Image 1 (cartoon, rainbow, N blue to C red):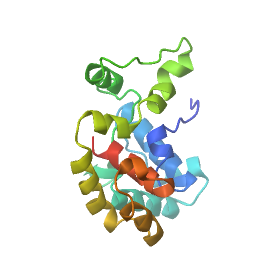
Image 2 (cartoon, rainbow, N blue to C red):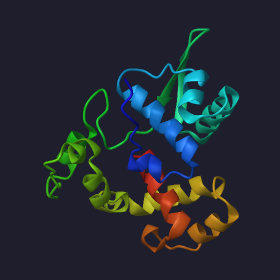
Image 3 (cartoon, rainbow, N blue to C red):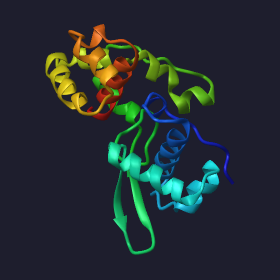
Length: 186
């Protein structure tokens, strides 16, 4: 029985429309509990769209590098998310990896079940920009980001990014792209 779908903050800030975000969240959710072998028909019923529209959205997510098709047996395809979220995966909680790398920082604890599973306070309090600065990789990461974003963003966003000296001077869509890029390149 389906109880709902949670959209992680890493997906929420991506430059996708809401339907594409829900589709990506569903793929991440199915992958987290096993493997994602869902059909276009499954996605179309979930999203209230036609199966061919679901197929086009999956192709777009593949092209943008958010998911990859890791298997196809002639009948079923296997979709796998390319990035990790801060919530638990099927292998191990990512929070435990972060705890070992941020031992000096205090991690907010929640007594509610929702706070424990969503880890929203943790995701908000540990900004990716600060994490990169702590690792002393800001300059290299900034140069890599400039190279990566040059061909992938609109002219207006590229103008914002290219006129910024460093990540801390970014705003608006440029800042969203930076945060997404950091999440994808951890």
